[in-house]
Amino acid sequence: MRPPKVAVVGIHGHGGSHLRTVAGLEARGLARLSAVVDPREPADAAAPWFANLGDLLSAGRDALPDVVVLSTPIHTHLPLARTAMEAGIDVLLEKPTTASLAEHAELVAVAGRTGQLCQVGFQTFGSHALPAVADMIARGEIGQVTGIGAVGTWVRTAAYWARSPWAGRRRIGDRAVVDGVVTNPLAHAVATALWVGGARTTADIAYVHTDLWRANPIEADDTSSLRVVGTDGTRYGFGLTLCAAARTPARVIVRGTAGQIELEYEHDLVRLRTGRVVAEKQYERTGLLENLLAVRAGGGAGGAQSADGVPAGRGGGRLLCDVRDTGAFMRVLEAVRTAPDPAPIGDTFVDWADGAADPGVVGQGNPSGDTRHPVVHDVAAWCERAAREQRTFTELGAPWTGRPSIRGT
Image 1 (cartoon, rainbow, N blue to C red):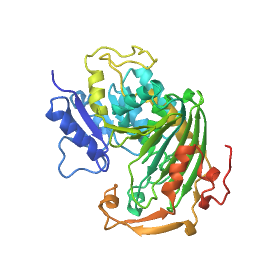
Image 2 (image 1 turned 60 degrees about the vertical axis):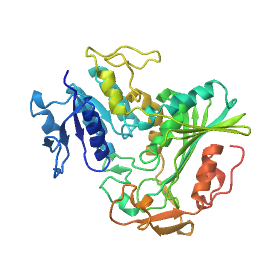
Image 3 (image 1 turned 120 degrees about the vertical axis):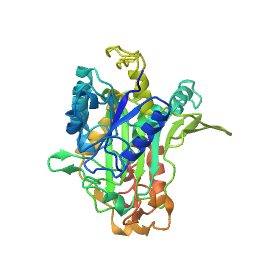
Image 4 (image 1 turned 135 degrees about the horizontal axis):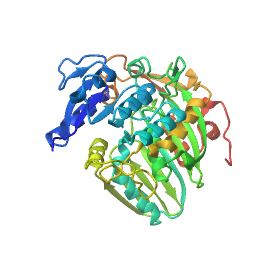
C-alpha cells in the first residue's frame, strides 16, 4: 500500500516542526509529504507549494491529500478545518481548537456530519504519562484528591508579540482571536490538568473564574490565574505567566490527602511523593499525527462508538485528542474570551530584562528581533500558590492586583 499523502498548511514558525514530523514518518514509510501550503513560497520546498488551501483543493484529484495538518492562526482554524473535512480529508488541527465555544460546537458537528477524523494538537494527550497518572489517582496512591493545578512560568520577548498581526490579540475586527497565555502558549497546562481530572467535554465544567493580567503592551493576557470547578466537584487552579525571570518546566500538580503527583508534561516526567518516599519515572509519547494515521488505516466508514461515546476511528482505534475531547478546554477558552480585557500590571511591579545573552529566552520562538521581556515581581511564587490553592491572584492578594487576600474561597 502507498503511504497516505499529508499536506502541511502553515509551514513557517511552528509549522516547521510539523514538516519535521512528516519527514520522520516518511522515513519509516508511514506517510508522504504531498504538498505545502503557505502564502509565502518557501525557498526550498520539499513538496509542491500552494498559496492557500483552496488552490490545493482545486488542483485536481491527484493532488488531494489524505490528511492536512493545519498550523495556522487561531481564527482560521474553523474555516480551514471545515473546508478540509467537507472535501473528504482528515485533519490534524493545531491548538487551541477554535477561537470560541460556538466555533467548537460547529467543528464537532462538521466532523460528525462528514465522518472525517479531526485530531487537535495537544501533544501531551499522546504522553503515556497521562494514563499512568490517572491510574495512580484511581488506585488511591495519594489518597483523596483535594485539588489539581498547573503552573507555567515561561518567558516571551517583545519579538514574540511582534511576530504576526494576530499575536497577542483578543480580536481582529469582529473575529475572535484569543491569543493569550491561557489559550495558546500554556494551553497545554490547562488542557492536561483537565484531562488528568477527567474533564473532557463542555458538560464536565461547572464554572470558570478568570483573573487576567498583562505586563506587555498587548490586548491579550500574559499573566493570568484561573479557578475552575468541574461538575463532579473537582477543583482546578492555574497560575500561568510569560513574564517570569526564567523559564521553568510547566507542571501539573495533583494534591491528595496522602501525597501529591507532579507531571512535567513537556518531558513526560512523573514524580510521586507520599510521606518520605519520592518516586520518579519518565514515560514515552505517541505522536498525534502517527496516531491519526494509525486510526484512519483500514478504510471503511467511521462512526463506531467507543466505550465513552466518542466515535472510534475507521481502523477501529481511537484518536488521542479527538476534537470532542477538547470541549472542557474550550469552556475555559470561552471564559477567557468573554471576560473583561486583561488589566495592566503597574510599572511598579515590573522590571524589563534583555534576554539577548540567554539562549533559553531567545530560543522561545524569538530567533531574532527585540529580546526585551518584562519580569513581574515574584510572579513564579504567585503562580505556584494559584495552582496549589486553587485561588486567583486577586483572591490571594498578589500586590499588582491592589486587593488584600480573600480568605475562605
